Length: 336
Image (cartoon, rainbow, N blue to C red; front, side, top):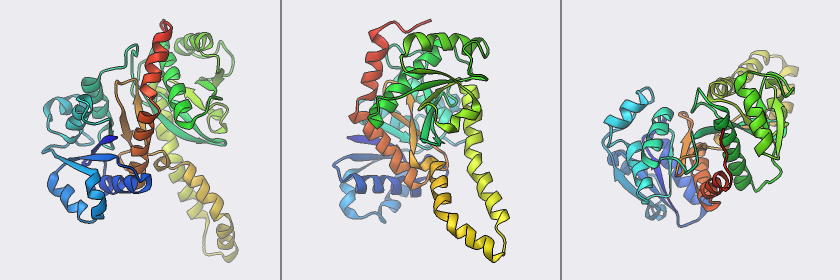
């Protein structure tokens, strides 16, 4: 498999992205190729610190531009044709790469993916999913911000695509889908959620019903559906939780001997809690619905996150997730 990697994307650039690619190749022990796209000089400098045996698994494509995190997505994609992100997605479109991974500007990646790859036949709007921790391990939330205004049919398609993605990657067919709402009752919510409830109920036999905000972390369902406006607010709140917990714990652990001894005793449990809230564990999430594999990583991604994002791309390709989405959306009319 050939995976195009935006080397320049993210807050840490080549030092992190190339290191992540190296660890991916090292752990997978496969003949996969990672196409490094970005400034050749910076790439060559970083590769000097990578064992030469892995150099045969890298291919370099030089680009002279990079899309910054704060740039206007549409303008940047149109004006910076030689950016690592645009070039990488074009390679994927032309079949010269089987997937694309970036920790760069999310809005630009969304725009460039739509322009380069288009949508899977039958998909009205792509959606971005994300993993959140729960008492049972994790929950997959979609949409996390790709669409701030959605219709019921969009949320239905998000549910269908997320169901296939999670089932294929985790080989789990016992998945429940919940709809984020302000109450459990069927008639609760606004026009969007009440209409979406009926569509999910009609088309998805594994639809659990409404899920309230307080139930998300309990893991009542493996998938939670919402529009991108609510999903993005929820995601950013969730990302801040760990930081608040760490600061609070540090603040309350002083110089008292017994307090510090207690802290040592709970350290393993705290480490497990931290791991559950760590976005690096899943690395990246796909833009579900585009006619290709476009993996979006957190801007602050570490090499561990990049490694895991490349693994998500590899698994999506091997499990034929997009083929299954296309088949599902076209086997019956899913519309409204």
